[in-house]
Image (cartoon, rainbow, N blue to C red):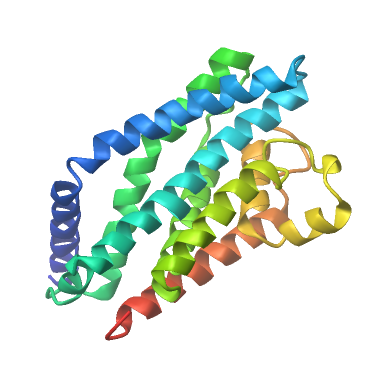
Length: 248
């Protein structure tokens, strides 16, 4: 009975969020889909002759950058706005558990991010004629990456002041795009910089997608999966702890 009540309240939170974001959702979906094609076709113009390896890196990078922009930028800005107009505090007064609030937001932003991810895959397949492995493993790895970026974004929102949170999102998105071996091989960066980034979830997430979606050996390793899962689990519980506090 309690379990049924939990899912009923969770579904109520999801419907409430969908209604609240009904005008925002179409614009986010269109923007993320446009960005996917822009990254694939735009960056390819600067590279010139693209090898199979370059195409694989660019395709993976487009998918990961799209996920990062949804979870670590757009979601952060949206939640910050909810905190400023009082909606976030109101949500905490509802007769629901804190885990229900967090899970509903995770589900909503996962759904919001899916069209952009699909657009990234379609753009990569049409531009580079890549063969992508659609399997239970690749779908699971993709879901892990999505959940990781969303929870990282939530943690930034809950533990940093709005001005700092916005600055962090810009550092993450531009750093991932230009100074992280997500869209290009790691040998193009200094070894010390690559070593540092190996312990953050962005590079490890790109690597496990390269191994699962494109079947490249040496990427879906226990190390990369451990780093990504560590960030996912830790940021989830950090977000849950933050929601349990009286005031954020």
